[in-house]
Length: 147
Image (tube, rainbow, N blue to C red):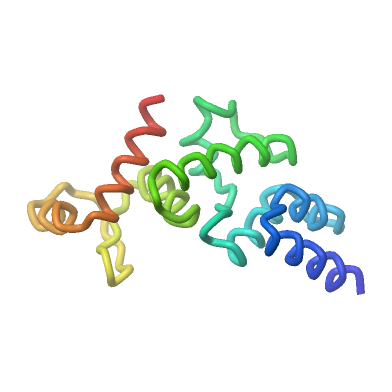
């Protein structure tokens, strides 16, 4: 079966950190484009690969150009995410989640995963101030939005 063969090949490449090649292998399958391939890679390799969501693409648009769903654009997206992973010391998943959170205006309580609308309440601020991961996410968001 082509799906099993291509996916297996892609995941083997991903386990060797050959993410661009892994994405190409996934995109060979009918109906799988760059965004779907990024979703598979993000699910399997969350430390290194982020989902190419609308929100993440918009956050990175000043650096990589307007939102398009091509392999070439995914390479630019992945390169920028990789830079942030390295500079901020967080996972690609955390970076994508921070971009999504900023775009949606939703705050996620650290540790419990419950989301609430960002209201800037004192309670929210005190949780953020005590959470280093939250401060890193804010720095990532501010850095990508300001560039």
